[in-house]
Length: 298
Image 1: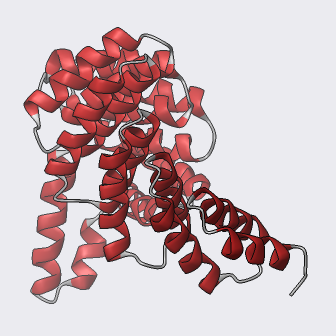
Image 2: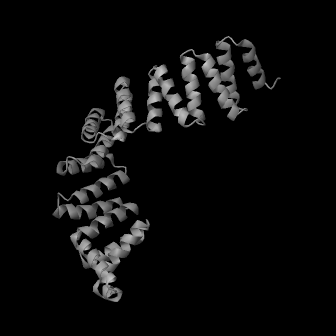
Image 3: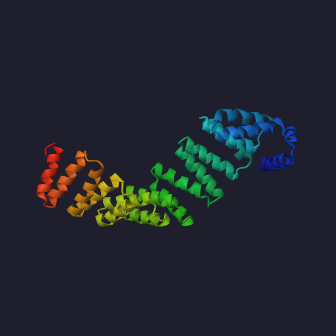
């Protein structure tokens, strides 16, 4: 990579001194091809970039700063086998090249090769144990192939090393919930909520988990906090109403259903739910009136 970095600095100096013509005379054809390939790659014109990287490599075989972007362009072009070969050429001469291992990891995810992700992430972590992206990817891949205990270990290592890693806390919570450990899942969701400074999506995930765990009062509180910031969120208001029903707070759930019906007066399903809540709260005449509206009677 040093060669390309020096080239970029020198190119800039030549341009600054007004030597654009000298710049193009100084750059050889391979370097120009590589720079054009970089520009095409940024525009996601991967097939065209591949041709230019290969052209540059014919002049400079084996250069890592050309092989690695070639590998990424090949991956973007749907040529994963060739992409892996390009990375392999770099790793054959520089087995501890972190950037090469990172590209191998990206390619494995791109190909949905979970075993490849596990191998690439493990290799990268052997070189750099603090590489948070590799540890996160390893945890996700282990979870995806059903190795949940190993995935849990990697998530916990990641969170210990990066206490602000909200996504890892959320994903660990999902993993624990799938294993039936709802208490552990709630703990991770609460940690994620604290680390995310009240992110609404994280808060909503915790509320849903609490409701599923039968902790309705806590869930209702979080739904209400959500609605204080997003009062027009229909689905959350309906979830709050159902949670209030579970708490037997039928007058309050009826009020929430009415708010939804103000926004969608033709929503027959919600009107039936309102009628039921009114009936449960012994407001029978109002309940009958809502049922009649559903039937088209007045």
